[in-house]
Image 1: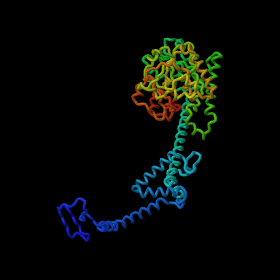
Image 2 (image 1 turned 180 degrees about the vertical axis):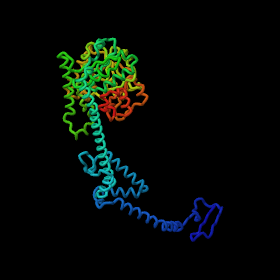
Image 3 (image 1 turned 135 degrees about the horizontal axis):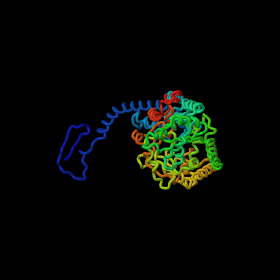
Image 4 (image 1 turned 90 degrees about the vertical axis):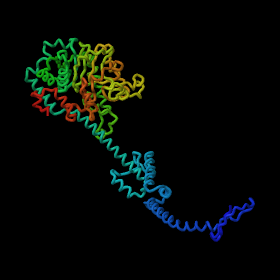
Length: 544
């Protein structure tokens, strides 16, 4: 079959089935060049004007966007403008282009802290912007305003703001913690009223305990509870809550150790407000006639902790408090180096006639009978304490030895396991005989000296760090339901069912229940164990 198309137009179409030579060229197969060129030229004449107009608009818009400052044509800014122009001409729409270019600039700002050596002492681009409006004003007046500069200046501004927020939070936390250790006016008034009553009222000076019960103080058949405190109402809450929760309160003998300053107030309170049928002993440190050797050891411990406090906080000024984030602010409390706080390690010397005691902090509330705790088998250990959380799988509050001790020091790393769980103090059973036989007080003093010789680098400041060392391998874990610690922090994490089922709840945080900064609900739980009809409380308006 053959087709023939005339060069001057389609005037004739010839179709033929004749077979020719396979090698002979057929004129019917040729298409003229002018027949193709003419339609192409017509199409280009229509399309090119529109294309030219579009390119012109894009170039003009890109040039205006990429040359926003007079200095854009010099140095690296000229290269940046050229890059910008290429991106706008050959990339997607404006929104996509802006997003991609801004992302690149932000990623570069994340990887580098400076550009063109224009950095401040923190290693960030210098900027005076403290707000978004300041940033916009600074960018709009800058002679080097581009997306990269915007990204770096934004990063510098945000870094400054983050640092200010962090320092403000740290300062707030330190001040809040220090405020929590202040003595409420009502407490001070109460001690003055009780001291006055001790001077004028014979009943306030009566023996504690009465003579007929004095033999119980060393009777091993009774359950002995030790409380070291200078807080009258706190001691009253611990004792009254323990007796209210006990099935046989007559089994309990409470030993309150206080300082000379608080002794008269403490004695007066329990002489006028006895907690029958329990036996209560109030004894001041000035009433102990210790051997000279023990007295020197007590002085040694107190002096060490005062030196430790001076080492970390002695020169701390107000403007430096914001830098105290890495220090344990618990040691800022005056009670940290107090005599009563350090006497825990001398409980065997305080009670030479006893072989077993239950130790309670003055910031606990007892909700269940502690008699079964007295019968817990210590399995040859010195101290019984809660170690695991209520879930039973992890450490209580996630605390491990590595959170307290400095495992970068070879002395610590070679003697202790960083993953070992920390046991809770504040509610413990102590076997004083095994304590004495293992000379744990002597070990405690040796570690004190070793830490002093090392420049106070073995552990974080705090009394519990040293207790973890002294009692290592001498702790008997008990069920977590006995002791719920962690109350008194700003953000309590305990669920209501845990608060209700725990035998002892412990306000180990700085927000003690007798302070206004504490939780109102938990404060009411604490105050309900105080005799609200007491005339001294009424006079001092403690219950407001």
